[in-house]
Image (cartoon, rainbow, N blue to C red):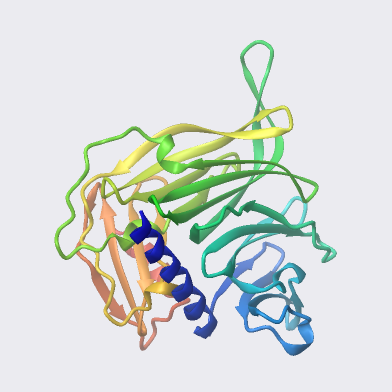
Length: 347
C-alpha cells in the first residue's frame, strides 16, 4: 500500500506540471439560442487577484454573434491547479452548470461545482468530493430535468426536478475505479449529494484477459449521455479489475428533497479491446472521448495525439483493431467526431 501511495503522489505532481504546461484545457457548449460558452483552464492573469500559488484558473467566455465577454470564475483563484472544466446547460431555467477539478497540492484533488444564472450571477461553490490522498480526473457531467416520485399506492409519478450527474476516475492507495455523484439542484443551489462507486451498480463477472500489448488506460475515461426524455443518463465506464466495460442507465428518484440514483438496466461490452496509447501521447493530459449510438449500442472510443485521431469501435459486441487517421487536409479535431459518428452509423 505504501508503494501504491508513493506512486499516487508522484502521479499527482505529474498531472499538475503537465496541465500547467499545456496550452489547451477547455470545454465548449453551444445552446439552442445561439450562445457559445467556452471555459478554459489558463495561467492566471496578474489582474485576476489569484492566490500566489494559483497555477491554473478558469476563464468563461460567453459569445453571442460576434460579441464575446470573458469572465474569470472567482472560485478558481485559490492556490493550486484548477483544471479539466466541464459544462452543461438547462434551457428551461437558462442555467449554466460548471464542474471542475481542483488540485490544491500534489497529494489530493477535489471536485467543485457551481451554476451561473442567465444574468451572469454565480451560485455558491459546492465541493462534493474532497477526501485527501485521492487523485480524481477525467470528469464528465450531464443534467436531467425530471425525477420519479414515490406515491402512497406504491406507484410513481414523474415530476419536474433538476439533477446534475457527474462521473470520474479515482485512484487511491487501495486501487482505482470509476465513481458517480448525483447532485440535487434547486434554483441553482445544491440541496443534496449522493455518491457511489459505479461498480456497485453492476453484478460481478468473470474477468477478461488483456492481451500483452493492450493498455488499461482505456478503462479510465468514463462517459455519460443524457436521455432524450431528460429523465435519465446512460453511463459507460471501465473496470480495470475485470478488464471490460459496463453500461448502465441511471434515473433519479425523489425521497423527500433528496434524489437517489436508481439503475434500471445494465449491459456490458465483453471481451478486452486491443488498445494502445501512442508513444508520443502525453498520458497526464490524455482524454479518451466516447461516441455512443443509443439504438444499436455501438461504441467508438477515440483520442488525439500529434495531429492524429486514434480510435477503435465496438459494433454488435465485437471490438475492432486500433486505427488512426492523420488530421490533415479536410480533417480537423472539430470535425473528427462527426466523421467517426457517420462511420459508426454505416452498415
